[in-house]
Image 1 (cartoon, rainbow, N blue to C red):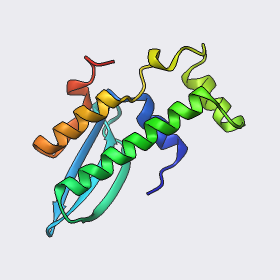
Image 2 (cartoon, rainbow, N blue to C red; image 1 turned 90 degrees about the vertical axis):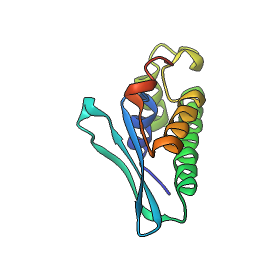
Image 3 (tube, rainbow, N blue to C red; image 1 turned 180 degrees about the vertical axis):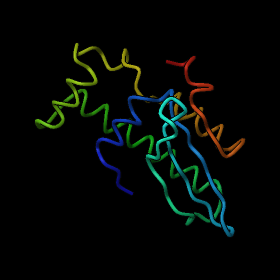
Image 4 (cartoon, rainbow, N blue to C red; image 1 turned 90 degrees about the horizontal axis):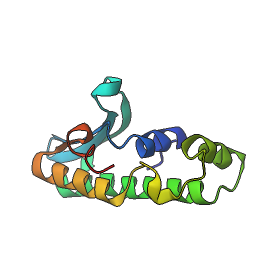
Length: 132
């Protein structure tokens, strides 16, 4: 599943204002990612119910977030072209160490996965503000 660079960047740079969900329809599961209440739940990613169980859908979200985190960290640490250099200048204008940035990290991904397993919904504005 591919998403645009701008969507990946929006997810990476706003880990405290996102909503993730797993939805069931006719014994299949789908996923969605929106911005949070600060941006009126703007849709970012929607995947139709094609997963056989809830855990498959959660694994898709975790895989997507891991790929976003890894690709954005790679871009920020070593931009390869003008587009990546522009992203680096926007997200990290002072060339700070990546560990100092408030982007999506493994702790965020773990909290999102746990909330999805527990309730099927993860609203990051409720629990991530304390981790950034």
